[in-house]
Image (cartoon, rainbow, N blue to C red):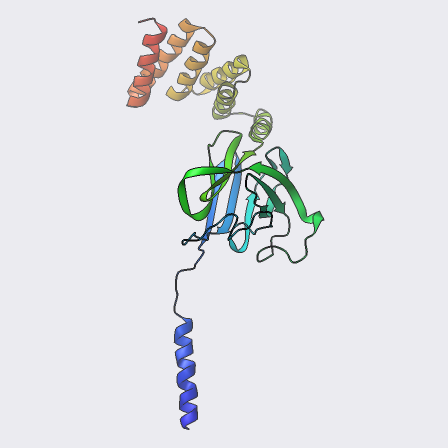
Length: 278
């Protein structure tokens, strides 16, 4: 009976211990960023320096690294993209790297099931392999991280950062292709908002200004708004048609005043003064 009580006590103690939660040494992180129209997601565990020497020591040069801790770090793309000019299909990939003193090799691997690097490397699972430069930073980042920054319509900078090292990579996404498909498809039966969106895209991406003006003017002939009239005035002014630009801006100003939108009132007043030479 004594042994039974001892066994039950040990089991109860073990059960209680199993319920205790403590912070993970390398916490899991998930980030999602829209670049243009493409969704980019990352999943990775974040090891910390904790007083150790990192690259060239804890993470040796010339040896494949899981690029993080625990399970392999992963990246996914909702559309076909390119990194450093390397075409990559939409999907999810494990991220492996071979750090060097000045250059890193980056491998995107189709099999994302591994805990760390694969025991058996399969070349046919490589979706991309390329080299990039690494750079020293004047500041120390304690916990390893990935960052998607310097966002533009069709590209961004994807960076691996840890300790005093940053490994930046240019990520390019097919925004123009996706937008043009949408525009061409929608133009079969567009409403005013579609014409406005198409015209604004043509103007802001440096495409055909005449086509941009045509689309925005169609939007304003169907359902004028103070913001669509404002866009028309900007296109006209950029084309050197200041008189027409002022006329469109005055219409936008009147509608913005009625709507009590002070931002558009100020922008239009400033533009009218500028285009009038005052």
